[in-house]
View 1 (spheres, rainbow, N blue to C red):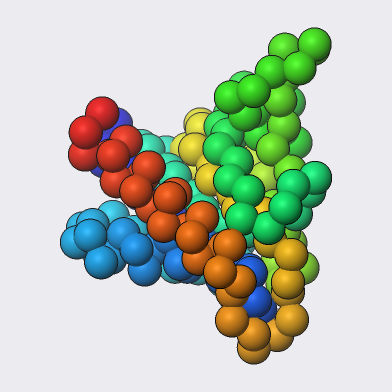
View 2: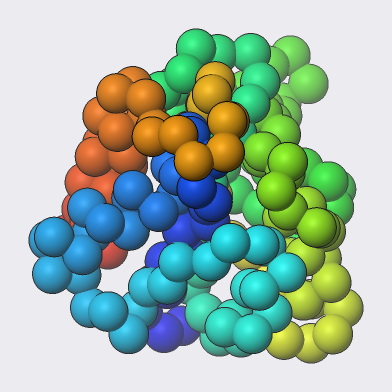
Length: 164
């Protein structure tokens, strides 16, 4: 496998900037620019991914938590196609992270990953980090909770990439 390739998904809609904020933090840490990109829509992943990648995706989500709550999971082509498995387990043995915010996305992230696999251009798994958002108004700044969580996620990605 090649080195990790980090993708930050986002838009200019308040807390939906979470993925982009993670990229900003990694850029400040001098993460290699050729190993990261910012995208607006999950479908754009098909232009930058390949089967040999160790893919890490950062995005905003909404679910059961307060803004700033961080989730980490793994999508795998071998699991149920609509699931992102997280580290916490329930009685069934599975833990799903909340739905990735798709208000500005034409195709949801998981569908794009599945399509990539079907087309033979996508990786067999992806690590996915999401940050719970709460404010999605166009042109607004991300909340302080999102900014703080993005710093935590960026540091975790840095550590996993360079000190694993």
